[in-house]
Image (cartoon, rainbow, N blue to C red; front, side):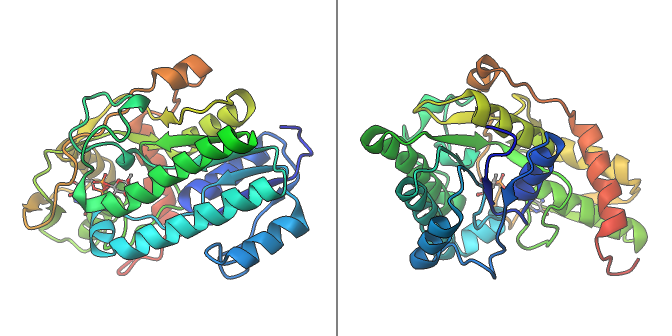
Length: 313
Ligand code: GFB
């Protein structure tokens, strides 16, 4: 990508989109266009086509999506599949109609079968049943991968797909009903410390294993892929290392400085037992993660305390 190229970052307010914008600015890309969901409802085909025809972006990072943790995904499956299908279909088709030079589509590691062999290779996609708690979101994201593949096949579009593992970072979603586990635990332990609460309740059993990648490392990886990768296969983007939810809770508890107890609410789902990505293709393309988990969590906690409105400060 040329430094003056016109780059559209779809979803720039979110955890991933805002990190991509920071990464582009860090790397002296000066011509970045963005639109809030109020300015441009990406589910509306006519509005998206008008936007692309008017702005004619040369490159597109498709980070806009309806995202959420295990509870949100299992509670609102119709909203997750509809919104994500509409967003990706409209942007990918408009990118084709307006001769976008290159588009990078962002999926998620939940696209893989619940019981996939670990670590999960890109070719394991659609080899078995999906995890039920996020099946709707997964089907939408698998469709996005297939759209990019077939627009490359039929129209010669240089559309690529990246499949990130569980992500965390500043500007994450800390709402306890819709967030992912890492930001939720930062908030839970912090509020318990501030409010001198005896125990913190975690969902499930604590036994599932998860891989966590710092979102600014993801953004660096995506810029690397945009500049160095053009092929049909989607690319797993992760650290290649995982820990249990119980281990994660202990790390966050220590960093926050909470001294109470941890209890588990077994009425809440565990979700996929494990989803460790095989990142050998990413390494072959030339990117390896930089931020270790404890440093990343410390950065996020510091940001959270200084930026997130606290209930009982
Ligand atoms: O991060 P999370 O919501 O999503 O849950 P997934 C990860 C694990 O943490 C689950 C447990 O086993 C949860 O039961 N957990 C424990 C908690 N306490 C909490 C808590 O307070 N909040 C939350 N949220 N979890 C998501 C998919 O699956 O992964 C998305 O639903 C997306 O679609 C994302 O793919 C990357 O990792 O299970």
